[in-house]
Amino acid sequence: MQQLLERIQQHGDQAAFREFYLLYSPQLLTFAYTYTKSKFVAEEVINDVFLSLWKNRSRLIEISNMKVYLYRGVKNGIINYFTRNKEWQHLDIDEIADVELKFSADPEEILITAELRKKIETAIASLPPRCQVVFKLIKEDGIKHKEVAEILDISLKTVENQMTIAIRKINEVIQIPVGKKIVETNMKQNQ
Image 1 (cartoon, one colour):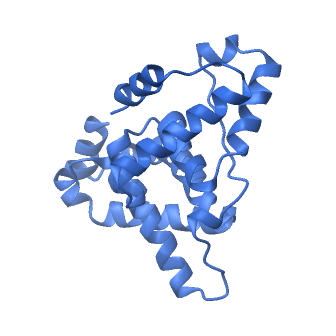
Image 2 (cartoon, rainbow, N blue to C red):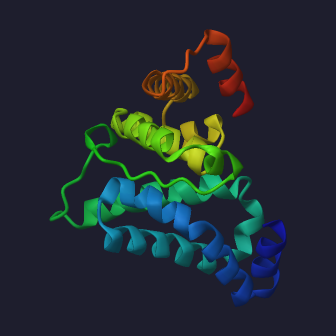
Image 3 (cartoon, rainbow, N blue to C red):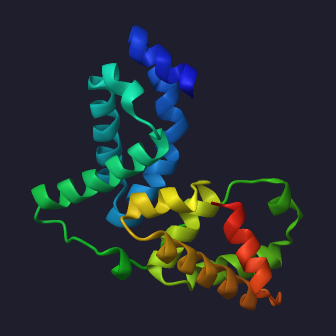
């Protein structure tokens, strides 16, 4: 990624920018859709964030954490969109239901039976909305706890509590006993 950013900043390399866009836009689109419930609005917000990034490409080196920068840009873009377009009803993250979670295939998922996967998906769908978003950002998008706290403007402790709730709920549904040590170990691995 650093190489792409250097090519974009130093040479205005459009091919590198396209590659960068294709790398991050799917995750950001899912994140934006979680709040907007509109593919059109989510795409518009994402494209505005990347357009702003392109216009300010000479300052890319100043961005210390690109992933957090992009997610925060999307979050702020959604807020701005709802502010500019009053016909869209603003939804608080705690009021959102039915967040779509898409898991990418990995070796663990391939081993999980279809029945168990269905149980896990049902457990995730039954989580409170904020808990779903936190779980998705950490487990699907691979974002660290501290970065999720920054993106959502919540405390690190809240992120940890939401992940604990998610893990316990999922484990209850799939009937795996979870001790405090297992949850704590999982939390520390993601920090």
